[in-house]
Image (cartoon, rainbow, N blue to C red; front, top):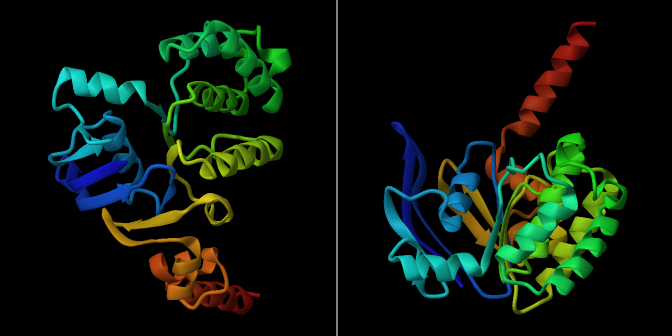
Length: 260
């Protein structure tokens, strides 16, 4: 279980998280959704231990982040974090990188090699596996970063905008299906920030809708749609976060007609 307890964080004098509390049960897939700058990445960063909140704390399976060295090591062994802009050892090949990540998580070498080849094939990177990652396109670099996260087989995955960064349709479909499979498992917990309603609707057990550093709703996709009397998740989110969009669209097209 992941517990974010009364988190407050800010950059300079600009508040980002405003007393945020959130619980994610074991085996759940939760999607954080909201406008750019609403606090999704900051919340994920605090869960991952990358950021330390001004107030509040994060618990992972009953262990408090940064409470002591032993607790922090135990948490890191069971968690993998994919940032929005992953850092890669560009001078290394894709296979070298995946092998190194798998070894950090103490996985058997034969197991890593088998999983690595399946991941490379899944994301159409087999031919690039022995090339240095500096020769990869932006989309290929995002794919290898995703593969490195999945190869850990960590029971807790934190993913910041995994579907952005130039992924092609095949990779998006592959990742969507992998996450859908993980969502069916009771031993894997996933928290993901995403701007894609269709992905959230297809994979999430619950969605946390964030605005200005506050969680407005924390419900299943179905209940979220019902609460807004909407046709689908996309319109429900728009009604919550940007209810003025419909009027703005009318004004835009009206102005366009008048300018002719």
